[in-house]
Image 1 (cartoon, rainbow, N blue to C red):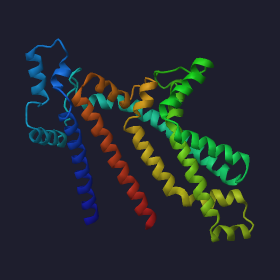
Image 2 (image 1 turned 90 degrees about the horizontal axis):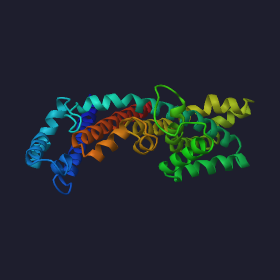
Image 3 (image 1 turned 90 degrees about the vertical axis):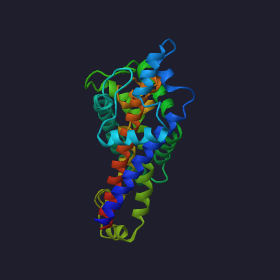
Image 4 (image 1 turned 60 degrees about the vertical axis):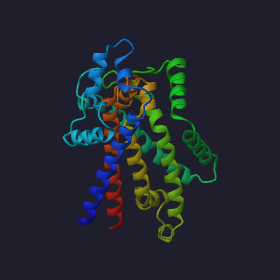
Length: 302
């Protein structure tokens, strides 16, 4: 009970620090945020109204306390440009992000584990070299480069898939962004599965299983894979949390209507309440993911 209380206090403090950082960045923006939001042709009355609505005319500490109070009441404020509640805009875009994240992670996990096993079984062969080379390429290449290459090849050159947008649950629109989003996770899972399996296969109980005549594929699938659950689950949860928090680059390049693109649109319009809401929503997701990872590790230890 004491450990849970300490963890809850720590997570609450982490969330409060995230709010402090966001408020500090808004406070340090050069110029008057109210003027930037209102535009060049706004009247002084409009600027004053925006400044009052966002509490920009109050001292920093009072603004921070007011923000904490509103968030404690689950009130993220209203968008400056649409006038709609911030939480409503986030919840409207979140299903698209969740759909993209689920498809991407399914691709990364299934393909990554399969290729990791293959590279382990084919150690020292050209197949292993190709798999490891491709994984290194995915890790070292920026995501926006992969997005552009996929669009160039499969959309513009081959004409197989649409270059951007979303049309309901039409899977043609989700293939390119999901492949781009899954590329880094896929490469990391390949590396982790391969390295962990090599280590596990060298252990004594695996050697005993081999001496008993158990086939190699059965040893890997039944005995060895259970020992790599924790490192793979850690990668999956962390990356899945980043996907849910808004894959900004991928959603922007492919015009995917998720919360990552919503954040970019809010930044372009200088919609401070919406920017703050999306960032805090992403922070909350990472905190929950961290709790899940710690729970899995503690369960494994027991």
